[in-house]
Length: 344
Image 1: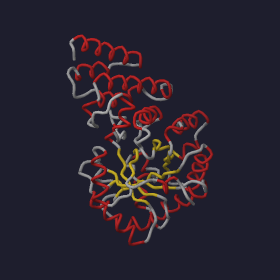
Image 2 (image 1 turned 60 degrees about the vertical axis):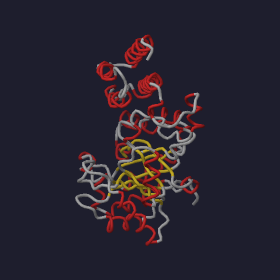
Image 3 (image 1 turned 90 degrees about the vertical axis):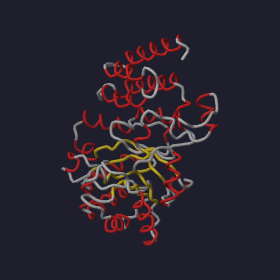
Image 4 (image 1 turned 30 degrees about the vertical axis):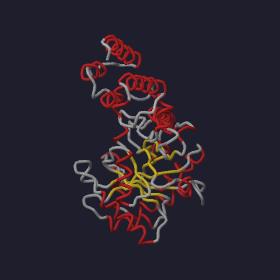
């Protein structure tokens, strides 16, 4: 079966699924300011397959909001978590019905609530169940490619044992967060192990694409890590905070966005531009998700957008007290007017 994965030039660069970060609002902003250069693939936030199958109508509809996307985000993969093959099969069927381009199974999340369900990183300890979930997703969505996101191991690095087992399920792609569950993000990502994963894949004759993940700073860093590890692609996560234009990798794309081509360093993006993108992002969040998600979720974005310029700390503190998009816009415009009067 030919899928979008087969059409990607290597190395490709993809957007990580980050809970309460890469929601529908932020993905739209990223698509606007990074496309058409990238990301080459979008992921949704992870969604509970159990919830989709077992929750009441109100709860299910809230989960369905995490599966809203636009055409500008294609190709887009729906990521689910569960330890129950039956629910994975049903969630996969739903993703196919909704028109997603692929399905991803979360086998790396360290959240204790998810692990209590036997899902996320706990699946590393139950490889037979992990393989069953891949098979179930394929049954539910026979027209879509199924991928997996996982780690080097649970308490220790067991890549040599774990990777061959999950590759035997023949996922279309496998994203490897180059740390164990125990390490969380407390240590540097072990990119040498991504290289070893590529070697294991090749030794087994597997066709699964290997995507490296962990501590990737920007596209230049991603290219370096891809070249050194041999990974087919690289996933960027935390680097996207405050930089929805992160994947705008060429001057022609930047010229389209900014009206000028003057290099790709973040510093060239004027403070005014960055702050107005923040306002745009905040309005989208309020419009799309304000009735079901706390406005406080935006605070992590305020921290990322509002840094590195005169008066950033004071503005950031004010934004942290804001309770809606109207307040955010007022504070931002007051800052811009004040600093333009100074000639900044």
